[in-house]
Every structure is written in C-alpha cells, then in structure tokens.
Figure 1 (cartoon, rainbow, N blue to C red):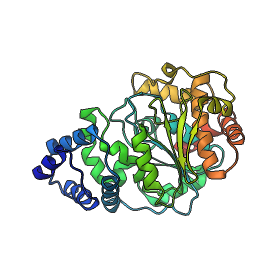
Figure 2 (cartoon, one colour):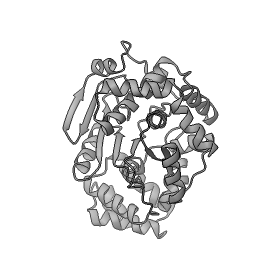
Figure 3 (cartoon, rainbow, N blue to C red):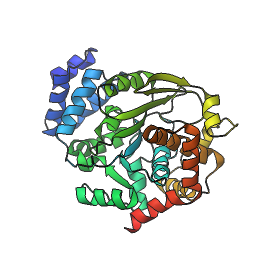
Length: 333
C-alpha cells in the first residue's frame, strides 16, 4: 500500500484495474485509517480520472448488497456534495415534490461529512427506518412512490470509512463516487456536480451507460440548481448552457436569489424544522423556488414535457400537500 501512496503522491494516476484492487484491499481491512486519510487527501488535491472512477465504482458495486428495483421507472435527484455551500436539503425536498406528482423516486444518500446534514441525517431525524430489504423497499415504492437507500447499508465499505470522513469534515473521493453507486439502479437521474471538470468527467461516463440522465452544475459552484447563476447542463442530447434569465423564467420568478437565503440551519434539529416548514408549504419564496426548480428538471427528464408544464406540476405537488403526504404515509407505514 505504501508503494501505491508514493506513486499517487508523485502525481501519477491509477488504471481501472489498480483502482479496483485498491477498493478490494480496503474491503479486506488491509488499508489502515492513516492510509485511507492519505488517499482522501490525494483526491482532494485533484479530481479522479475517468479510469479511476470506473475502477472504484466497479469494485464497490461488486461488493455491494444486491436488490432489484428495475421494474420501476424511477428517478433519483442527487448531488455530489462537497461544494462547501451548506445549503438546506434541496435535493431531498425535490424528491418528495416529485413523488407527490406520482413519479417513483429511489433516493440514495449518506450521512453528511463536509456539511451539517446529509440526506441520511435528515431521513433518520424524520423517523425513517433504514432498510436494505428488497420487499420492504418495493412496498414503499408501490404504496408511497418513494424509498430511501442509505448507502452504508448497501455498501459495507462505505460504512467502514464513515467515521474517518466525519472526523476529517471535508469532501472526499466518495462524494464524487456517491451518485454512481445507487444500488436501486434508477432508470433516470438528475445529478448535481460541484465543479465543471468533474461534470465533464461524469458526462463522459454517463454517455456509456443506459441511464436517462441530466448533469447540472451551477457556474457559481453549487452542485444543484440554485437560481443564483447560470448552469451548464449535460444530457444524452449534448451539452448546453442555460442562462439565469431562462431559469428565472421557468420558475416565473423575476428575482435573483440571494445565496444567503439558501443556508441550512446550525444543527440537525434546525434543519429538520426548516425541511418540514418548506414541505408543509410554509417555506420562504427562495426556499420554495429552489426546491421547485430542481423538481421541475427531474420531472422534465422523466416525462419529456416542457419545463413550464413540469414547474406547475411541481408547484401543485408542494402547495396541495401531496409532497408532504408522501412523507407522512411513508413514516406512518
């Protein structure tokens, strides 16, 4: 392992095979905490290459607990995290809004490492019981249109490094990998990426996958659509630029969002209250519009209707209480 570390610290990159082997060694406990921290540091100094991402992904998925949810035409809305912006739980809110329109959602997530509250922290605080039982997840999708896949339950290797990630408190290579590791293999995915180079790497990878996908990157550094800047947008139809004026037009907003209004609370309890306030229809204008625009893009990915039509669908889901009812039924079982 020390030879590999020396090799990486010299600025070299791994082949796909070497990347697979590294994850296998990690899964067998042959890499200690200090070495794991060193690997994380290396990939914080540069983005992983396509070969490295593909190798890491292949090995982690081979080691994962398997479930089969392919019968569902579902979507996941997920960001790489690690953008350092500490926003409220935008993608999770968007997922419930989408589910409130009748679209199936297979949300994949983890505890926060570089932020106060990851999607798993939120779901746990709300009272959701994590499971990797296929029949339970299928029942939730059939009855409520939503299920949540807590990454460490499906990827034991991620469970092993969770504490290390928490102690470091910074983004890691596993932020970049996370969106590729959804064990439910949703057929549709809206993916937010925190930097342009990584967005292009993902775009290259997704062109060789069967997913119906869209990759978004806000040009001011967010891994979500925040209505604070224009975005780069990648899909099977190619690469495009969507101006801030066009985004504001979709949301029928004439007001540029103040980034300060996107901030999360200071602790888990504050974030839970904020989440429930927005989901209950009591969010601020900013909170509502940002959640709705992300839900709009996810709906447009799956149903091919215009952004304007899907914005109205998303808005009705939130304002009618349908989005909140998905969560209520999910927790009431």
